[in-house]
Image (cartoon, rainbow, N blue to C red; front, side):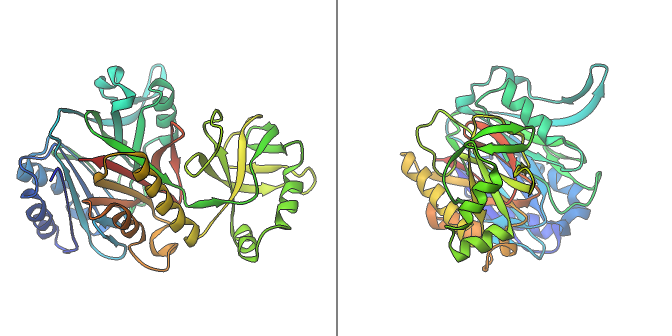
Length: 390
């Protein structure tokens, strides 16, 4: 098997690490190319020992890891107890791995992100991927994504912001045989990786597509020539009782990323929150800068919508590719799990139901990274799934 994953809920860190190593090291035919380790806050005191111990035991070419308030391993999501999840990958064909540690520094030319992998300058976006795990308190993720999108157009960025930490200096990111307490760690994968991304934002549309005809910064002043408040009042009249409840609980808006498509479907919208409405002007404020000419559609979110969306997007991915995935990583929002769904293990269960018993690992993130319409964004309430072909 080219991939392996194991989960331990042992409270003792040394025992947990031994368990996941024993369960995975005999699955691969030789040493792993990539090892990814996720650990719950229960193992924070021993976080400094995790990377050197695992590096010595398994000798992977590249090791990454980070903490998460809840940890995913195969078909389980451990939300309220100790957990350590290990995922290994070994590629038969040539895959280049360039690990890196990005930090935000003040330089004579201003603030900069230092530590980009040198190989990124020559990377082919079509056969490359950045896997990134970051500290939410010390890493400027918006500046990072802007630079990645502008300087390396088409390059996919996936991963998540560490969780289960409460301030700068508490996070321990794992890279190679060491732990670092700031910035982001990651790896540039190039070559015959056979990787794709599924980003499920958990919403479903209401109403119809509209074009922004007047806007300023993050304020939509007109939709198809009408004030947004007037559009929403008209939409309210045709909503079902359930949709009205979701509308009142939290309204969202989806912005189409690729305007050149003839039709728009799931996965084409970037979902953002609605901040408020001005009762006088009818203007709508959202958590994203907008411009005239963009296509948008109002959205609602609940457990049923999120379940339907993840199932549908995984099915769409399977139908669009000849080769099924043989391994997966999951970066899901810490607002999902049992905080959103009535039953535990939801996202892991859906992935296993649609893809079979693929080795799976991940964590509940404080922001999920993934591409929509060829651009990379940080998301909320989202399940960002990375699928690796055999």
